[in-house]
Structures are given as structure tokens and as C-alpha cells.
Image 1 (tube, helix red, strand yellow):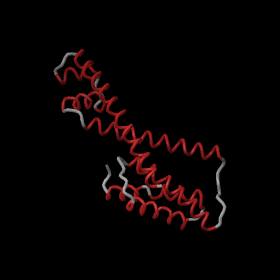
Image 2 (cartoon, rainbow, N blue to C red):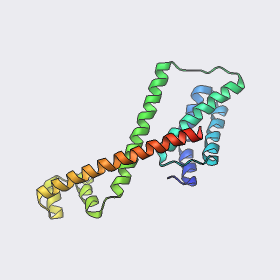
Image 3 (cartoon, one colour):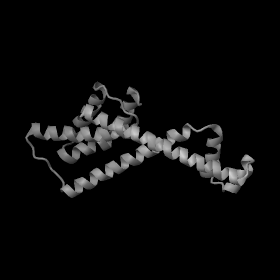
Length: 180
């Protein structure tokens, strides 16, 4: 889970993108900055946690858009809406980015949880780019042993990533319900 200081740090790092999400609706710089500040305020005053940056940013974009629509209602302005197809594409794009980010965070966490031998094997094979034959030589293993261990690592990482993503998604949906 992200700490309060990490939440603030990540929101500030994403300030331009979050404010831009509000600006797309308001077409007003000051209103979009107010929306961003409201996002930060809501993140700090609600009792919901975020498992990772992807969940936080997904929530922040939704809150910024809702706050922008509220601002439009209060100011009596009409929503400068894009075509429904364009909005659907933007939502799909944001969902895909969040999903990719969730997968990356999950994979990083799962790789970090490997034992030292597993980390070394993955490092040699995928980060150093050695062929399996070379990995076998370096680690003083037989080639079939390298293949077997890599297969087990792949399966374990796959299960770990799927498990973490399901946790991220359920936590993210709870965060959306509780914070919007």
C-alpha cells in the first residue's frame, strides 16, 4: 500500500496529466488546477488506501473528471464534450494503461519475491540476455535443469502476477466506490 507521503508524491508527479483531464472538460486553466487540488485533498481526507501508483492514478483521473463536471454545473457552463466514440477510446486507452501499469507493478513485486537462485537465473537469462546453454554453464547446471527451473519460474510468476492483479483490481474498485 502507498503511504500518505507516497500518495502525495505520486499525485504531484502526475499533476500535469490529472489537471489536463479536468481541462479537457472545463477548458479553464484555473478550474483544472482547482480540480487537481481537490483530488489531492480528497486523497488525503478519505480513508481508502491505494495498493500501487496505477490504482491511485486511475482513481485520480476519475475524480478529476467528476470534479470538472461539478465545476461546470456550478458555473452554469455547458460541458465541452467530445464525441462519444472519442471518449470511449480515451477511456479504453486509460484502462489499458492502468492494466499495463498494474501488470508491470505486479511483475516487479513477484520478481522481487523470488529466492536468490531464481533471481540469478532470471537475471542471466532475461536481463543479461544469455542463452540457456550459457546460463547452464554459468550456474553449473545441466541444460534440462535450466529449462525445468525456468519453466517453474514462469509458471510461478504467472500465478503470482494474476493473484496480485486481482488484488489490485478489487482494491482499486473499492477505492473508486469509497472516494468518488
